[in-house]
Structures are given as C-alpha cells and as structure tokens.
Length: 318
Image (tube, rainbow, N blue to C red; front, side, top):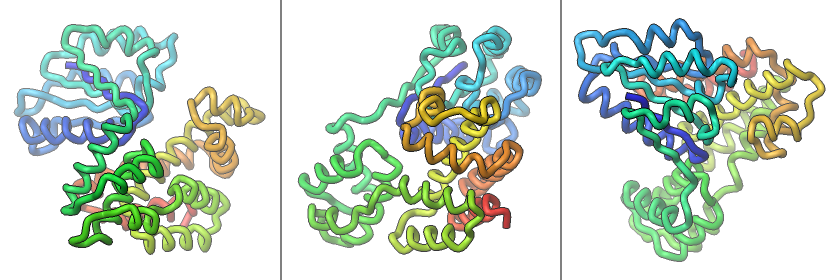
C-alpha cells in the first residue's frame, strides 16, 4: 500500500500522519520494530531494503519517507518508481510532503496505482477554519463566541500551528469564562514567524544573548515549546534547502530562491542571509539532531522545552 500525504497545510498533514502512525502501532507494531522513518537524506539501496524487507513477527511493516518525492530529480525517477511499484503487500509506504507534489514524476506514476491513497491537505476555507477553532476550543475545555471566532479566523488566518497555540493561551486565560472579542484583542500576539526569523538571525550570528532573550520573551507570552520547536525545525529545513541553492550558485538572488523553493520573497531573503552563516554539513547535523529530539519528545524521553534549548544550543555551537 502506498499513501501520499501532501499539500500546503502542514498542520493537517502532520495530524494525518500522526493518526496513521498511531493506528499502525496499535494494530501492528507496539514494539516499534517494524517502523522505519526517513527524513531528507535518501539512499536508493537503503530505501529499497526498507521497502522490500519482511515484517518481524507482524503482518505489516511501515516505511515513512519525509521529503523524498520533492527531492527526486526527474532523471532519477524511473529507478524510484520501480522500487515502489514492486512494494510487497506487507509494506505500507507513506510519502509525507510539506507542499503540493502533484506535478512530480513519482506522484504521477504512482498515484493512480490500484492500492494507492492520496490525501492532499489544502488550507482551510473560512467556514472550516471556524469549525476548527470551535473544536479545538472545546478540546481545551473552553468555549468561544462567534465574534471572537471570526476575529481569530481573520487575524491568525490559515496557519493552524499558530491558531492552536493562540487557542491554548486564550483557553487558559479565559478559565471558566467564554472567550470573547476583547480577549482576542488583548492576547493574540504578533506573528511568531517574525520572531522565529529574529531568533534564527541571532543564532546564525552566534549571538547567544539575543537568542536566549527571544526564547525567554516567547515563553513569557505562553508560546508552547512544542510550537516553538516545530517552527525552528521548519526553519532549519528551509536553511538546508537554501544552503543547497547557495552551494550550486553563490550569487543566487532571493527571487530565484523564492521561485525554486516556493517560498515567500521575504522568507527567501531572510533565509539566504542566515544560511550563509552555516555550511551544509553543519545544517545536516542540526537537522539530524532535530529529528532525534522530535522522536524523543513524542515518546516522552525529552520534554519539549529541553528539545528547544538543545536545538538552539546546537545552532549556537554551544
């Protein structure tokens, strides 16, 4: 079985992948011995082995490939297509992408196969977004009036990571009261993404004092450490992609990077400046640490706040 999870809404993609993985672990793999999770770096032989291997004392085996589809060059696609077309019935492969990959050769070749399932996670429209706000508010044990719900949809927008964080803060503040428009006006913070850029700018300059000040300020605003960690990992991934662009062409301009990587020009410009402060090996090492910390935080071995501190310390070279 092949499963594609892709699209612009990384929150919904993340949640769907989480649901699939939890269901698989419950049904087939409580020990974790039949799950392989690959991120960013893909070796053909290693992936072929992971896909073709038989499960150990179980009916099924799960292979998660994060970012593989978007990393494959068209000239190399035939070899990869052959691997997945010959995937045994005992292996479930999940292709996880943080963007729309429907134009890729691999997707086009495999998406219409008999046992392939596609989940495209598009950004929510306003009606669905307001239902999301209502549902998440209830999950936090709070309630919200229609004006506040509409204000949040307008001010926070389609970034569900930020929306979840804001709803958590509002629900804690409201206590037993109903969340209203006045609370939204008082508590909804500026876009965290801008603060993350400030943090990345500080760590790229090895300015530990400024970096720690930004972290402290965000924690005082009750920004969830898991959200901070997710945003930091996203930025490290972007830096790695931008570093690759710079290695190919040191004079590449922000406009070209924005087009090639489908980034906002503002994001591309900021990322180029930060990426110049790292070499590719450093960023791969940081990304590998982020992956390990992500796994440990989700299994309870490392608290989210410790994961954030360790990742920032690694980027600072501490």
